[in-house]
Amino acid sequence: MRSDLPVDPALPNWSVNTLGALCQGGGGDIQTGPFGSQLHAADYVDDGVPAIMPQDLVDGRIDVARIARITEEDARRLARYRVREGDIVYSRRGDIRRCTLIRAEQNGWLCGTGCLRVRIGDSADPRYIAVYLGHPSVQEWIERHAVGATMLNLNTSILSGLPVVVPGISEQHRIVAVFSALDDKIESDRRLARLLEETAATLFRARFVDFVGIDEFEESEIGRIPRGWRVGALTDLARFVNGKAFTKHANGRGRPILRIRELHNGIDQGTPRSDLDADDDLVARFDDILFAWSGSLGAYRWPGDESLINQHIFKVIPDGWPAWFVSAWLEEHMETFRAIARDKATTMGHIQRRHLVEARVPVPTAQVISEADGVIGPLDRQRATLVGESRTLGLVRDALLPKLVSGQIRVPDTAEPAEMIELAAETLAAGP
Image (cartoon, rainbow, N blue to C red):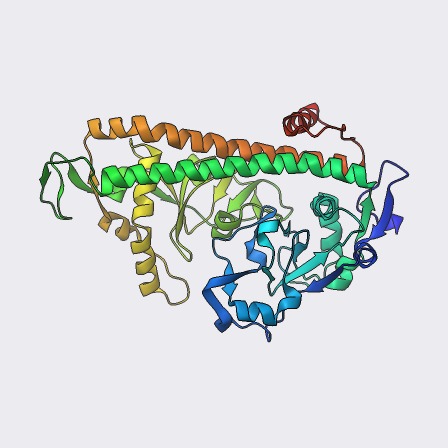
C-alpha cells in the first residue's frame, strides 16, 4: 500500500489503512445515495427534508440556496440514505473533489442521488478524515483511480481503497482544532458579510425604491418620483462590457476563465485557464460587479482572484456612481430580466443589450447619492473587507493542510482559536 500512498507520513508511529477498512473497523460503511429509480424529479417539493446533491457541495460546506427537498414520508422510505453528524458526503461524478462533513444541524438530511456517504464510525475522528480528504494529493489519488473518459465517476470500491494516514487520536484532535478554528472564523466572516449586505439592501430599497422620508414628488414615465430626480436607464449608471470566448491553454496555465459555472461554484480543478493577454475591461478583479445575462441569470460581486471573463457575462463598470448603487439596481431588475429570458428560451434563455436600456431607474441628485453613500458605502466596504479576509483565511487553511496531515508540522497542545489562526498565518508566511 505504501507505494501508492498519496501522503507520506513523516512520523513512523502514524498508521496507514484504507478508508474502507477504517469504516468497517469502526462500525461504519461507504454507500451510494439512492438511484434515480428510487427518487424521481417529481418527488421534489418546495418545503421538506433537504437532499444533498453534488452541486450543493461548495467550498467544503453545503450551500442550501438551490438545494432540493423531499417529503418526510419519502425521507422515511429512504431512511438508509439519511445522514447524521460526522458522516462525510462525497460527489461521485463530475467534480469528484467535492465533499463535506455533516454537522449537527444537518442530521436527518438525505445523501442524494449522485453522492456517496462515508460513515467512519469510532475508528478515527471523522473530522480529521474530512480534513485528510481535502489534501491535494489525496484528491489527485482519487481522480487517478476514478473511472470515466468524459466525466469522472467514483464508486464505493474506489473510495474504499483510498490509503489513509492516521495519527494518534490526540494528534487528530489537535489537527482538527486548527481547522475548526479557521473554518469558524471563515464562517463568522461570511455571516457578518451577508448581514451587512442585507442591511445595505434594506437601506437602499427604503431610500431609492420606496422613497421613505420624501414628501415632494412629481410624475414621470415610471410613476411618481421625488421632485428634482430624473428617469434614466441602467446603462446610464454603468458600462456593460461583454466577455469573450477565450481559448483555454492546453496545459492549464494562465488565469482562470470565468464562466457562469464559476460564478455559481467558484474556481476549481475543472476551471479552464488561458495565458492570453486581455484588456482591463475583460478582466475580473476582487469585488467587481459581474452579470450573467444568459442561462441562469444573476449578479455577483466577484470574490476571487484576477480572472478572464467569458462570453455570456457582462463586467459592469460603474460610471461615476457607487458600486453598491449600481449593483443594487441590477438586483432590483433581475426578476424582470429572468422573466424575459424565460419567455425567449428555446435552449438557453438570455436578455439582450436593449433590455438594459429599457430597464428604467429613478436617478437621484448628487446630494442625495452623496448622503446615502455616507451611510451605505461603509457597510459595503466592510462587507468587501470581510469577504477578502475569509478568502485569505481559506488560502491559509489550504496551505497549512498538507503540512499538518503529513506530520511536517506538529500542532502545539493549545485550544486557543486565536493562537491557532496566528500559527497558521505564520506558517504560510514562512513558506516551504
